[in-house]
Image (cartoon, rainbow, N blue to C red; front, side, top):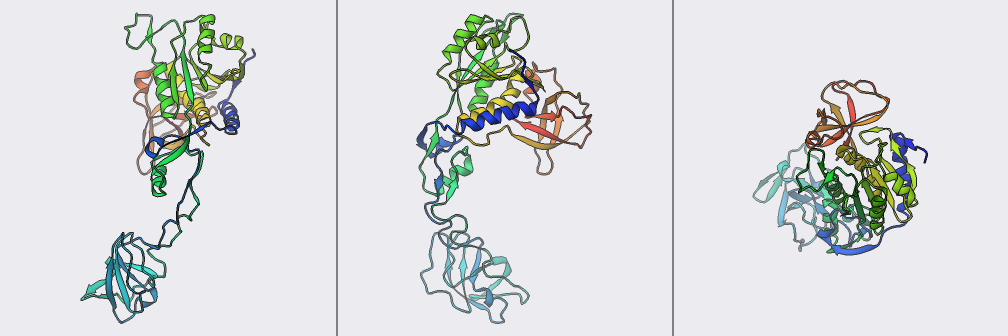
Length: 407
């Protein structure tokens, strides 16, 4: 098999193309209680069951009146009060009249504006205005149907449901919603050096952290992790383990994809009829990442070093899981931040450096965390993002704008 080592942009484009194709074949859908839909992907749109708002709504505490009456020398007579949850049962508002109104209440017929309470003086049921005060018709009122018309899509199918979508669905009367089934993602860690997390490793062994980090990332991505037993560095054992994952929607293999003498994953995949779309990406960490398709499912061969595993998941696996879930535009997620210090940059690879991002209200600040490479989980555990340095970048200075890969 020839090497298919791509730049980051090229590899990301390959993922996008396959994700787009998957969106043409949506997964099955199921009905779930509204709160159980959080972080699931909507299969049918949420529709407005009536105009929103269903009545002209006051956006302020104040007084409903007619704009052309404001500024007149004659005070306006307050003829009643209207709270949220009530409707005005009197006659339509006439010239020279006002009604005290609370935020969220329906604006009574005849009124065309709401004057904020702080702009008037009330004396013996009469409103007095500063002669210079003016207001236009429509101010501080949301017209009926201005937010959405009855039958309009409030949340589109293919949207991953967040708290705002739950609120919108509840406002439209949805106690249940239709969501796509969550994909099942198999995790197969390989390597003779791996032992279970509850076992004390010998000097030459390490605990199997990758299966747990991947399971956590898969869960956060809205899918169901299926952890398989660790496969030793033996082609036949790896092939057998891969066959056991045949009923899953996606297979993630961790380790065994580098150039070492005992890296047998690609050999096993080829024996099972795999097609490879790329066998490496010009990134650090994560250069040995592999992406392809078996007859029954897509697969990723992720590097064994734990930070490489996490980074390549965010860059390549998460967007494909999103598509398998029915989500459009599923990532990865990037933001801009300002570098907090000078940073020497090695050109040639797109690098993702563990960083601490201070997401303040002004300009996020990014600080690189000192680390010992892609095996350094201790340092990476204190990172909340990865600072990106492009392959063609020169040295960066404090204050420069940088992209950040969000976790």
